[in-house]
Amino acid sequence: MGSFKLDKAGFKVQEKSILIRSIAIGIIAACAGVFVTTCYQANASSDTMYIVVPMILICIGAGLWIGIRRQRKLWATYELVINEDTIIRTQYNMPTITISKNEIQYIVESDKGIIAIKPVNINQMIIVPAGIANREELIETLAGFGEIQHPEQRRKKY
Image 1 (cartoon, helix red, strand yellow):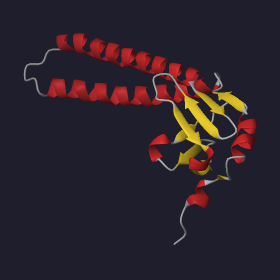
Image 2: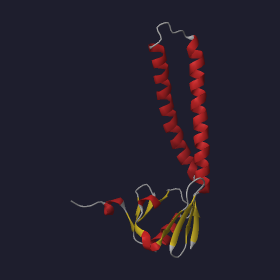
Image 3: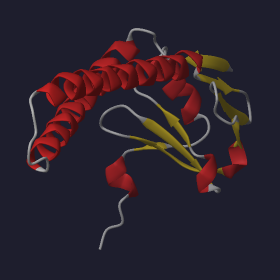
Image 4: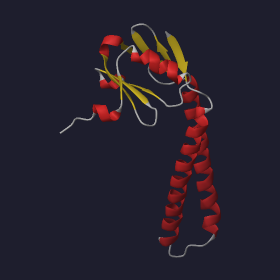
């Protein structure tokens, strides 16, 4: 029925979000580290800061670079294959998930466009990011597996 991959341009939005969050957390951690270092050294000299601050910045930069590179590879290798009776998700360094049509409990689409396909076994859930290519075709194909609900429909009414 079809093979769906993530749009390469969609990663730019994710990358920006990752960078903003990581840089903010890195700055807070670096400030806390410098504060603790200076407060608990009775005879602290500014010479220590000339070593500590660049080391912290290098560690933050290296961590960001490695994390973004890993996320980019995961994004580029995401593939959702839909046959007549199965949905298969493959991705680099992740186990392949296969869900048959009769195992699907429900399909939910969030307000942000993320689609979750929940089978009987919660460990086999497939999450489809909003940046999927051919989104309309995917939604039409998934409609053949069951009704696509919205979170409000899934909430229990008390």
